[in-house]
Amino acid sequence: MEKTVRRILRYFFSGTLFIVPLVATVYFFFESFRWLDGLLNLPYPGVGFAIIVGVVTVFGYLTTHYAFRTVTDVLDHGINKIPLVKLIYSSLRDLISAFVGERRKFDKPVLVEINRENKLFQIGFITEQDLSELGLHDMVSVYLPHSYAISGLHYIVPRDRVRLLNIPGTVAMKYIISGGVSGLSEIRHDAPPL
Image (cartoon, rainbow, N blue to C red):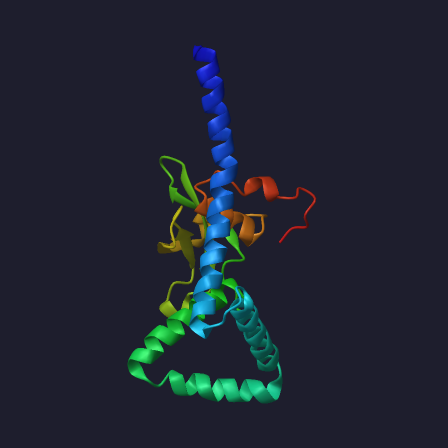
């Protein structure tokens, strides 16, 4: 009887490992679609999402052309002159550009030596290699994300305590965010060095 109960519990937890992430993902996308459709007051689910993706894509296409880029630069400059708006706008713009675009910051995963005596390391990302404007010539700026959270710590670290990792930034981020339980299996061992 005890073996049967253990087997049933094992099957239950195996099913949970598959179903919970699947349901959570479907629920997240369903709620996102519903929220976007509610913003545009559209009767068909998913149409609001498609419209928003289309508009953002067209806008992104336009911003890559010189004539439209001048307009966006003028608009960007104007927004950055409004005190409180500048703080929110520039922070969000920098955060988004850290993940996508030409000025990506989370593409250089590193292993940071946190405590030399105890051999304690943490994976993070170099966000700035040249801190000479601050008078810190032998230091780098490193961001260390927290696991299971949208937060992290920012440190200025001696360059000799940072070692570049030969893995893609997306894999390193997944590994960190998951608390070290996923991500490393996605590393292709035949991948070219970064």
